[in-house]
Image 1 (cartoon, helix red, strand yellow):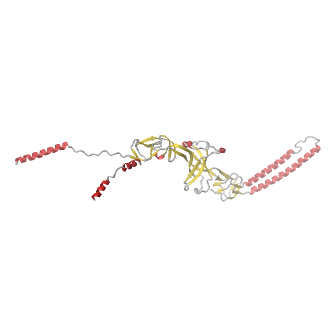
Image 2 (cartoon, rainbow, N blue to C red):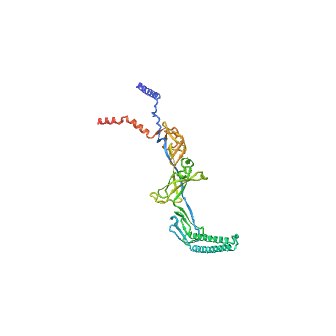
Image 3 (cartoon, helix red, strand yellow):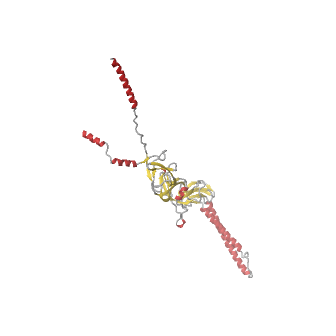
Length: 412
């Protein structure tokens, strides 16, 4: 019994020491997995190829009349009538009477001038008779001597002729003033503003209205300095008869729905605009008020329009979307699965696309996907290529569940 009491504690102590030593000799190890694979950025790319591109130069301007005039009264008097179309916005034809000034005073002037002409003609006839009589008397009493002009009454005869001419001129002037009591349209046009109405008394040179011709309108367009080399300016290219050949221009306005007009460049201005340091060209629209299916509302003077000017045809150009350009100076391409930043120089640019002068080469893969703060050298995968590779690898493998499905079916 005593021996049993001694051996039991001893066995427990020995077992404890052995277990402690075993634990020390075999510490637990953490089961750690490998580092997770870094997820690649998936980007969409476009292969850069040589393109043929017809440049469309964008500009803008305000519609102005090609011919604009201030209609003035050339005689004095009271306005007794005006035409129905002699109002703001009214259309009129060439030669149409727009306003009538009271002509009674001028009719009286014409009659007075006619009377003066008759009187002068009578005086001339009398003087011609006196001159003929003086010549006859000298032939009879002059003893063969040379008579002076005064004796023959030649100065008096010339004075009588001058009075006839003066009276006739006064008659023509009074008749002209009578005609001017009718204010006649000098061309087919439209009234921009009207300053007078029936019953108003006007004097000579009073401004009656401001009018403009409706056959053509013009738009002054600023051109960027980089766009000049891509355009055929009218001052540089001339056709038969030295007539400038203007490039086609398409005008657009959304003032009332969708409005479009076709025009042409007609000239360039003679100097660079000192304020903007740009050259301005002038485009012209013929017959802008002609009713068409697309333009139900006529063009307005002062209307703002956008213009697309047909430029030159370029071959072998490298063109990229503006959305791929960062800070206007660099883009990203993909080479061997990584991003590379490329600094570029833009030759020409519109609102959507840019022609690249240097920095890129044909055949490179341009990144189309918008990127944030991404460093050059970041590993990427091209959208579409990895999917194709996965599909090719998947074709040579058997689905893993087929065997299980088959065995399950046999068991059932």
